[in-house]
Length: 489
Image 1 (spheres, helix red, strand yellow):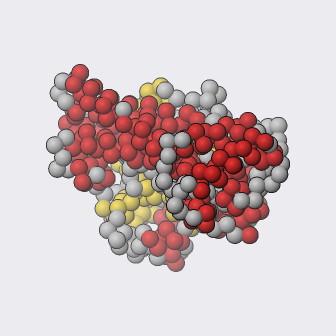
Image 2 (cartoon, helix red, strand yellow):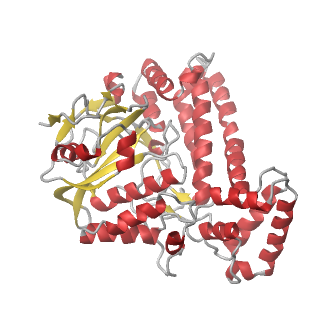
Image 3 (cartoon, helix red, strand yellow):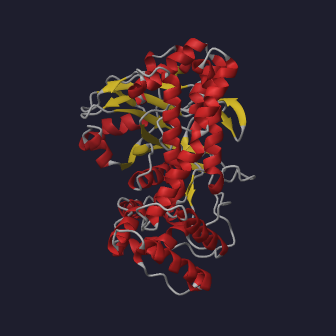
């Protein structure tokens, strides 16, 4: 039995629980032995209207562990489906419980979810638990993405459970408190289309419109307008991923949110050496979700979203398909425009010329040819301190740089303004994989969180270009072993 706690600041509404029972199962988190607070996101807690001291109390830690629940909580596990590596299957929150929707002092609504909180009806044979390392990893990467300006779910806290979980070895258990605009996914609509009625699908769509797109409620075709808004948000998100070298790793339809936030930081990582074929996930042996494939995969996922929504577009199947195709056809251009605008900003270009795409593509081709570091190439261009080695020492780069400088001279903005634009769009630091592993090893193996706290502080303002960040900008030492990340841990 999960007891209630009277922590102040929690202000729950539970709109999802007012949907038909088809979409969820009422389930309580499974209590754990001896929870301990590992890390708390104080600034996020304040934004949510929560009191840090209370969250750090015994009752607060018990809440993060699922042993107690705030007043007004209505815990549930959401049902959804998904195409996993192209194969459709029934899914759901197998190790996560949505405890409620926090209404902030500013009137914003956020899902509060406990990840790793035990088995649910959707666990599919899993234990419903999570290991400390992956939960801390999600905390680091999601907060880094937030600081980089990439739409993302966020992490409020991680607690250890005092229990071991069995993976390849015994690992310390942990629970992450995730904060999201919502957990509505493309897979949620696929689930409704497959196992619900058209009325259920319409109810879910109305809920999504009301929660995320109230501006389309009076549209003559509100569900089509909603779909177009999701396309726009995903086009923006994909461009932002590509512009910082982020590789998600599991772009299944259940990991594509309607809100346009990045969700599920399992086998994700940031690219060091630029190569569109880069894959970090241990299970992505065919490179389906490689860096260069992400925009196309997102388009594929949006097509699956359209398939689920067809009954709401038109009563006639053929007409509905035509409507969906016309809407989806906008995605490639929306993505490309967002990406090119972002790449031009990374190069200090304000006004657009049709030749800019060639300038960008030439640079990327050089970076791939010479195995240049993605982030540090743009960092060096921003600081105008490209050292005379590697790609920078080649004649072809010098010729490209001359063209770039000539391009900058044609715009009315000054060189200093261009440099400032670049500085705002080229991070000095990213959560490099070897630094993430260093922080996780210290915390998980040695109980030392100082490395992680220092790292998070460095990542909190990635565009600062401070001396302190220079050490964290260094790429990893050369290795013959590819970096690998793992899913479902």
